[in-house]
Amino acid sequence: MKKSLDQKLQAIRQNSGGKTFILADAKDADMAWGIASPGSPWPADPARPFRSMPEFCQDIRAIVRQELVDIMLASVSVMHQLAHEERLFDHSPVTPAIRANDTTDVWIARGARYRQQPSRAFSTCYIEEAQFGGLATSRQDPPTVNLGLYSITFTNDLATDHANLETFRAFRAEAERRGFRYFLEVFDPNTDAGLTAEQIPAFVNDSIVRTLAAVPAPGRPQFLKIAYHGPRWLEELVNYDPSVVVGILGGGAGTTLDAFKLLADAQKYGARVALYGRKIKEAEDPLAFIRHLRLVVDEGLDPAEAVRSYHRDLQKQKLPAKRSLEDDLQITHTILHY
Image (spheres, rainbow, N blue to C red):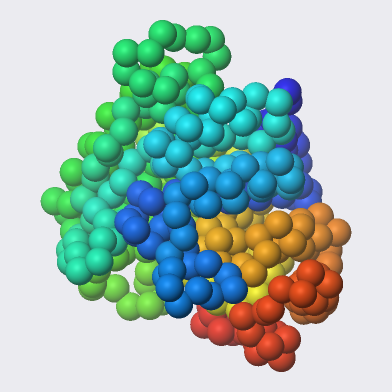
């Protein structure tokens, strides 16, 4: 089965100014949140604040079978079940991917204070077990899972960033030797970096460019995943080196208009990938939500009209909306008020 990701990456590299767009669903919350990872049931159930992992995996199966996202990102444990045991992706155009490292700024256990300290590199999993399902498992060619997200958080602290880049260099070497592809997520500083709000986007862009300057083509990420800081900063990074495919992360859930407008604006100003996690997970109907994401990027549907259409879908299913249509048509993300 040809993977839509590979076809779209080829099209984007041949025509970086085209409208080809890659959508990913980030279902790797269990690498961060713990028990709350699957989210809360909807409609709400006071007796059951959080769903179970089997329910979470059922959502993943449904989204993969819908075939509208290009990448399904999950933890190694979830992918062991779905990709290696169930062979969910064998006859699917969707590419399975795993979170290849779990830096300390995603350690969000209840009561934890790790995020209050500069992010440190760490990886629980091994590339080989992600590819083949275990360290002692018999090898197969090609590997079942061969794409991962690698994350770096630059903090403007010399010792921390130096150590994080040494770990990234080691990861790149192992990935290239094993033929493992990756995409690079670069978060904004998770602690006070001594920078103004205006300086943070420039700091992140420069850190990305400086890091990749020493990486030859075979070792480079398939694409980038960064926070959207507005048109100026996205265009700056996209225009610097058109060979680098830039994607945006979804961030918090927000309103439905936040999600659709962020997608439309990112595409308008040069992003060619979007990875939405909480925005999909916390939608009343994830499948309808994803279908409307596709309408926004593929058909050019106006974000506000997409919200209205999504609410009509909810009404047809007699599924209550979390917000009124009027409230869901509000922009609440500060970055979208530029």
